[in-house]
Figure 1: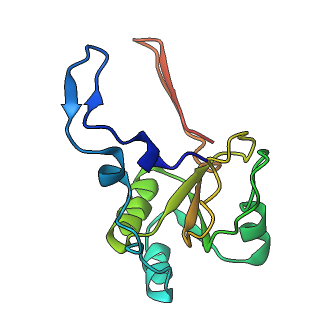
Figure 2 (figure 1 turned 180 degrees about the horizontal axis):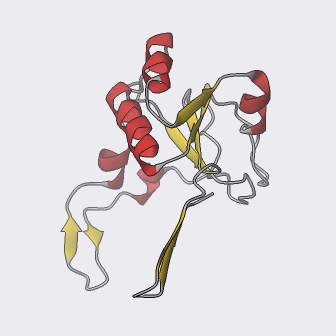
Length: 149
């Protein structure tokens, strides 16, 4: 897995080679070392209050989300989140942000690069997109919006 700190540069370049940000990648997406929050019972209780969100902490769920189809070693999450709407995703991620909890997003677990697995040493949650099964169709524009599940 690539450590985003290795991607740091003085600025991120756009396709037109004009700086779009002077922030380093690690400053934007990674809290400082040791600054992640703990997955506590208070945090899990707050997650359980989010409408249309199932929170799983049973051993079978945790083990099934500990690996994908990659060669990476398994790493068990602390909880698995199963939102069934985009508002549930938003509510869950807002709480993870507030409590500084690491999140790995998982589809069906068929990824080959380990993106659905939390980095070793991180105690966080896996956000499963399997229950996002909505399909909206607009006949006028002949467009379709399909959920990630």
